[in-house]
Amino acid sequence: MAQIPFNEADRLNALKRYRILNTAPEEALDDLTKLAARICGVPIALINLIDLDRQRFKSKVGWNAVDVPRDIGFCEYTILQPDEVLVISDTLSDGRFARDPLVTAQHIRFYAGVPLVTPDGYAIGTLCTMDSAPRTLSADQLDTLRILSRQVIMQLELKANVTQLERTVNRQKRVENALQRSNQRFHQTLDELQQTQTQLIQTEKMSSLGQMVAGIAHEINNPVSFVYGNLTYVNRYIQDLFTLLNLYQRHYPQPAPEIQQWSDKIDLNFLSEDLPKILASMKVGADRIRQIILSLRNFSRLDEAEKKAVDLHQGIDNTLLILQHRLKPAVDHPGIEVIKAYGNIPRVECYAGQLNQVFMNILSNAVDALEQTASNSSTADNMSAKGQISISTRFTSRGKFSKLPCVVVRIVDNGPGIPLAAKEKLFDPFFTTKPVGKGTGLGLSISYQIVVERHGGILKCFSEPGQGTEFWIEIPTCNVPSGSFETHSLPAPIRLETEGNFTAKSDFKAVAYQDVPSS
Image 1 (cartoon, rainbow, N blue to C red):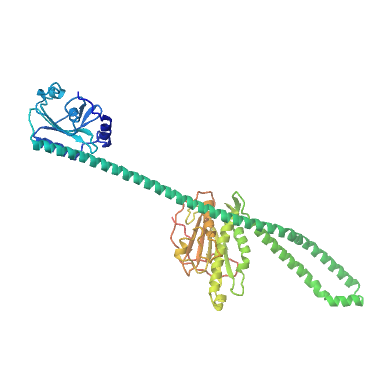
Image 2 (image 1 turned 135 degrees about the vertical axis):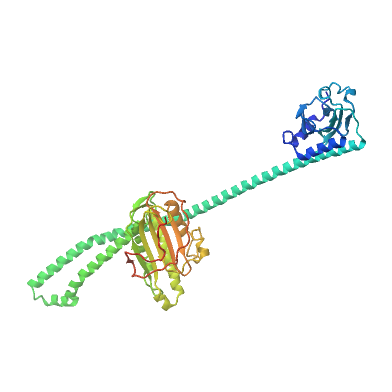
């Protein structure tokens, strides 16, 4: 048995670096082995890699074994002299190998082996040729074996470099994929943060507005209730006084001159006729104030944490009541006509205050667009072209977009419409087409979140420049998850027909876009 090389540990590490011991045969190495056998004129040629305790035949010609123990054969001696070729012309004549199993059992009589030396100087194996008969090799044959051994190492180095490159590429791909996922998570987190910021800003804004409106409504409600409650008594007392006055006039038809003068001065007959009318008018005004207060209190229900069954018509009417001052005619515009076509709809389980916010955002935008159109028109055109907002509601067992039982609310205006580029960003946070200081870009984004995410509904905008704008809202009448609805193409151009201000119509025909449930 040959001695162990002094650098055995480093030699084994150099061999492991190639990661080739348990891999499949390689055509390039097999070609070198065949070439070595042909040049030397022998039947057997091997590429032998020497591991800790075994010799592994990576490539072979004329040999069946896959490996043998390390202490058998000749190659263990060959790696002891990395710079020399070991040639044994007749193994029976060499005392080191005469009793070797390869000689006695396999009848090997000739051996020539060249160490496979790595660029670092470690002999990891051999390129060897063998024959069953004694022979010698010429100098050219030996030199060719040396060249072939270097080619074997070059192939191993090439494979190791390619493997390392593949691992580097794969590692880089994994890093890129990880960075891409991290980037996606970052953008997702950023979007969520932006949405949260949007919600916080708008929620705080609407909460403050709701508290202020609720506070004002409460403060006004107390004195108005006092006035309204006492009007009945005042009317009764005045009627009693008029009855008493009539009795005096009947029983004392000739009053004193001073009384007659004062009666003529205050025009008692007119006062008797007009005072009840004034009281009736005051009662109507007080009723109106009470309705406004009730609308303000209903609209300000922004802090309700649970869904409640509410009448959507009431929410829409409350919103219109708050916006009424912007709908009336003024010096610079003819006012805005509102066409209402309310269908027979059930009460809807929803967050009432939040839906009121949606109606307020959409209707306010419609009013802004119509006012802008009026301000851009000439005075004559301005007074003749009246802005219109049409609102229709109905219940359907199968929504056009959600495919669920729902209440459909359609809000249509005959304004200038929305350009395609702006429509694509309509529901993005902080996107606005309004001048600086007149819009935050939060209204429609919040409205979309309220309808789609909070209520599992549908909110879509259909518009063409110069053809007006329609907002289509579907509020499910049952609890459904959000984010499961498909998108649809733009509808036909919008057409409006006129009616009186705040006109209720039984057959709504404000737009040409027909809602026919698809099969």
